[in-house]
Image (cartoon, rainbow, N blue to C red):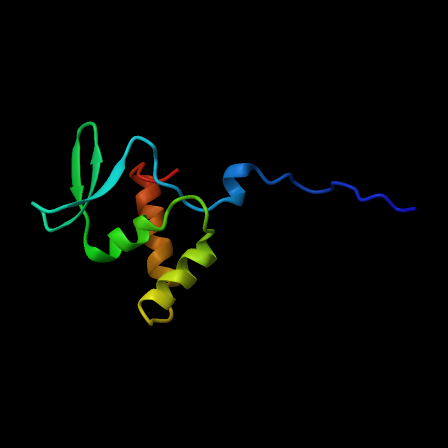
Amino acid sequence: MNTPTNEGPVMQDNEKRGPKLNRLFRLQWEPAQDAHVLLYPEGMVKLNPSAAQILLRCDGTRDMQALVAELEQAFNATGLAPEVEAFVDHARSRGWLE
């Protein structure tokens, strides 16, 4: 009887799940700004509609492929992957995403 082996690198939990908003930030609709904003202890970032739609879906339950597919379906568009990936990379570099 062959038993399965666990060869290769073990995937960490944060690698299995998709991008997730850093707990130091809060995403909300701000009527005074007429936009979604990202609030944090030192201030606020006003988001454009595209950035808001991406961050609204960054809850850790969607990997990048699922995130892009959902956005493409929601906006009846194709080929969004490069822009979404670039924004997610930017948001991670700013500390907005885990």
